[in-house]
Image (cartoon, rainbow, N blue to C red):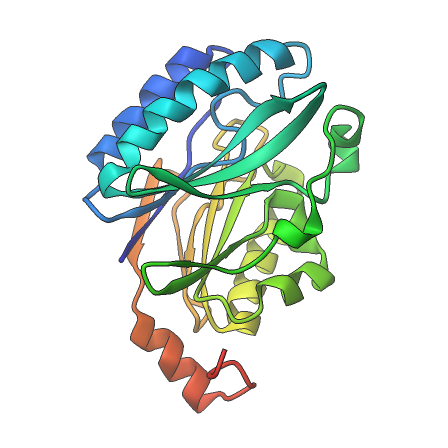
Length: 240
């Protein structure tokens, strides 16, 4: 399975952001697993949240169609009743197969003032065509207790909008997560000027495939590599 990390800039124009995202998705091979940066279509537009939610409702239908021959993981700013959430959707074969809202909100970005935290119980491993997949949204990767929620996954997703000043933290933790869990980590970060970039794929051996100059970084997930590292460096995950 080909893993694709997108590394795009988010502008104030929602439609332009979607048009560019659509072009990148359509350029990917069939059966690719694509991860977009956190809130890549709208950003954290606290003064336009109702507008962002309205746009999200329209775009979700279009992305569902784009996923007929691909798997697409993307976060949306959306409203439920009177509350706002930062919610990850996984689209697969034209259907929504998983949803989870960001549980750990980033205090330095005032996220807790605008969003309701998602339920921790929704951070879990799901099966996608025989692959065990889990997700930690941006800031959530900092919490050791959440690493236990994704223990045993073959692939961990980390959509992010991570700041440039903490680039080393972002890259170090995503690599450590792959090594500790003996799995692949697919991370997609924003390419805006104040963001850390660092998007890419980290293998179960800790090899990093990153390129801050590209909008699309790809690498093939080899399930045998997961089995191999768990067999020869046995920390109890080979039966997970």
